[in-house]
Image (cartoon, rainbow, N blue to C red; front, side, top):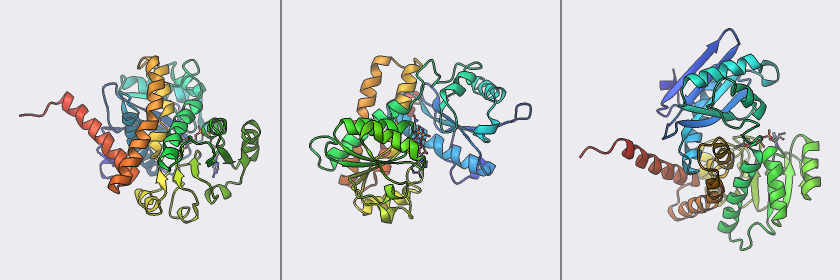
Length: 351
Ligand code: NAD
């Protein structure tokens, strides 16, 4: 029962879908709605249990609220998970069935690609609903704009760490040479940073290195490398009790969602004097670009929104230093303030 679930945070809606005809088993969660509903990606994963899927969708939809609100977008947070192995279970009929469910929500939830789904899948979903972003026609891969946002957050972190010439001369270790990490490596190298990159797929890391002049390190090494900044661009939960003691960096900032295994790990990071840009702030570029491409706000507002990731990140880092709160706690408080103003506009206080 979601009401009793430890990850339940007064989510507005949690819909379970079990469609025997197409095999679709999914959960859609809306954490908070705003003026234009709630938005977040469709994750397709072979979850080991229904509870694991529920846990993921509750956590991810909440993180989307923070991401969307702090990116200045007129949407709250939503997310969906489809239970299954995308390599075997992802069929056009299943995706179309999912599209019909999204359509039935009448715009309350806007979906887009996430781990296990692609712009091609969004094209299939778009045959059933208009409440979908990230199709091929709209923009294709959201990796490059996400990397653009992470790059701005890294510039803020560099400034916070005392650098006076952007990331030039800093050593950044990137975990993950995929759509985000690969593009980020190019931006950093062009800005004069020394870049190390790791990926279990050696050829992927090698290709990024050849294109950008980065050096390849092993996935084990990247978490203990002596560098200025670690940029997690692969998995969630990478900052944990197990990895924290080995970190030899001054800051952490990357595109991966939910980098802290627990909020306590944020406190441990801070106690070690390692500055952290909340992932839901650094990784907002993809959805900022996706919503502009979907026509949900004027496209000439996209670049300023992307650029504002820098100032938002810097403000969070400075407030965290001044108050002793963790950057995540500071960012959450900022988002709650914006949501409070929102709800007072819709429901003015009774005087
Ligand atoms: P991707 O699948 O293109 O790339 C991820 C890469 O990480 C892969 O090359 C994979 O081999 C590698 N990897 C896996 N385990 C690793 C490990 N232990 N060490 C080093 N590398 C490892 O994914 P992506 O689109 O680049 O996204 C990366 C992260 O950013 C994900 O956590 C994703 O949720 C998050 N994110 C992506 C976007 C986007 O628009 N693509 C937006 C917001 C957040």
